[in-house]
Image 1 (cartoon, rainbow, N blue to C red):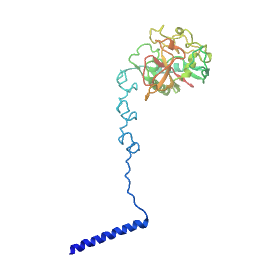
Image 2: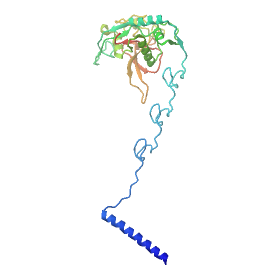
Image 3: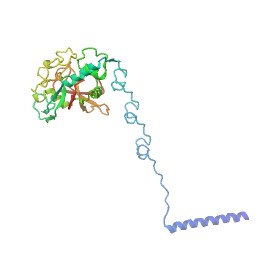
Image 4: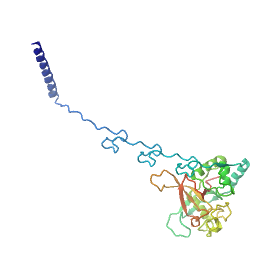
Length: 326
């Protein structure tokens, strides 16, 4: 009997609670809707998982190039760079182990003489206007380029000058120290210039492309020659017809109208200007060079130009110094 009364009491209490709850809902006029479950978001891109192309599981990023490892051409594992030439070791001709460099032996007095000669060999080029990139004698509607006055060296940078600044030469450079330095990358030349400027207090630099061409043409004294100083290349340049494909001592041929030597032939010359990368997704920087070299002929004219990676060193490419003021 007691058990039956207990069950009856529980049913009465349950019915009473249900009626109170129903009354509260009717009184407020609101019905509580069930909460929707939100689609989780990708922690990397912020999109919902169903719209994320990786479904919330992005591949890791390459720490070197910043691309995801599935798009990095090295799969996120770039080879180390050579400390000497700046190329990755798989592209360095020495696999990152360049041969030892020859020590200098130049005295301080010899170095000071070389630096003084450099300063004395800087030629002032009066500013002017010309048809940049247009072969002499060709008619063209190309816009004219105006160049402000600047200094440029009579000669290409020699092995002797490189030795005085950098205190080394590659082991193979044991011949005439008055030959132009070559086989040096744009970036290594920039390091040379930075060190030279610290030593001398002069702000030497690469010539800009238009400055280089204007000077090669003879500046305001130009006679409109095809090559730098003559229409006969053999008069003013070491080229494929007279050089035996070898580099020669600077200043051995006739100068151009401004007294500048070897602007055509002997070695190509790096310029300041950057060239847009010809390859997609390429991280290299490319720089221009001008003038042709000793194993070429037609490309030794005053308008021919080419480009290479700034970190790469090529035989037959050297450089010449310029300055805005001395």
